[in-house]
Image (tube, rainbow, N blue to C red):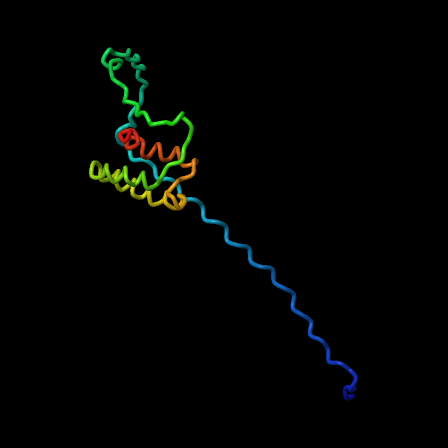
Length: 141
């Protein structure tokens, strides 16, 4: 036999053919819903006649609407408010309603941020002041 030559390469191995992936198992069938047990039949619903609308009675028309609080206006135009004056009004009305006192205290705390050094609030705060301090402003006039 002859000896292999130095410049001969050894044979390269042939890769084995790939096996196809096994098919996934079929999904399990959905379970059948339970059958209801025999018993009472379901209740039958029936439509009722529409009730006739009630006519307005005299007592309903005799009700007095809530009073409207008149706010002091200077010609009706928005104005600047002084936060220190608002605080004084709130302090004078203290202890009538503790929840309202707390609400006004928090509001005044927030309003102070927007007041100038003299305590004047910009005109843009007029609606907020009138809504929040309305009854106090009216009683002060």
